[in-house]
Image (cartoon, rainbow, N blue to C red; front, top):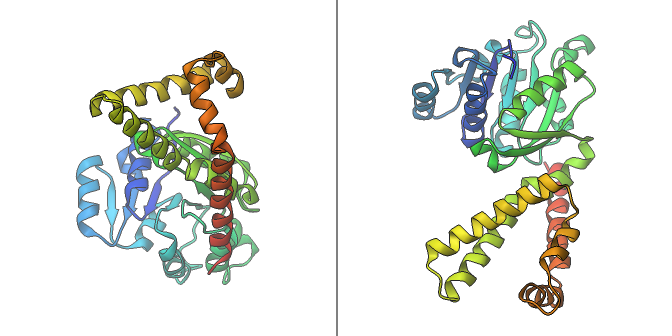
Length: 285
């Protein structure tokens, strides 16, 4: 991956921020001295500085001033306060284009604009393009799946910078912002659905007499293998399912139970509920 010749700053130094920092350094997209991070927890900053050799500061404005790309990695309930703190320093501190990337769930671009843009003229707003991102927790092991959407000031070069950063921790697809609720429901919340299924398979295996460690290994390897088969064959899931299912066999017996209990319909209802809640959160506040 080509070196990103820009400084990247993180406001908020939680797990997702660390995953991104780790990905940027491991992929050689950024050198440690190109990365800044701020947080209210001084001990956390010391930990990241020792672990990765990055620059840290307890002042958000220091990170803002030092970065060409600013990742807002704070919890949604703290976003207004953080954005207000930054906007109070405008326009004196805007000396060039600074791409703003938000990974706060349920926090729409319009709310970021409302906090950052009020005192800025059209030219100054153009210096602060915004990209909203919905990542997921597998980013912690550099296997994330993210959806992203830029505002009207985000140029193609800004979007490509965001793609480069997110590719360092997994994969990314660009969407219109209206689609991010569906992205949240499928990939943002998706790992929890998979973990729920894993729990069920392991518990069933144990009840059937398997050692917990064996039940875990069987489950994990089956899920990994199935995902790889889907990815490499490019066959439809229904087609692959049919190939596993012999008439009158064990798989058919299991699937008949799932069909009888309408598991597929219930799972889709759960995803619709997650999307609806994401939409509600985006409109609240």
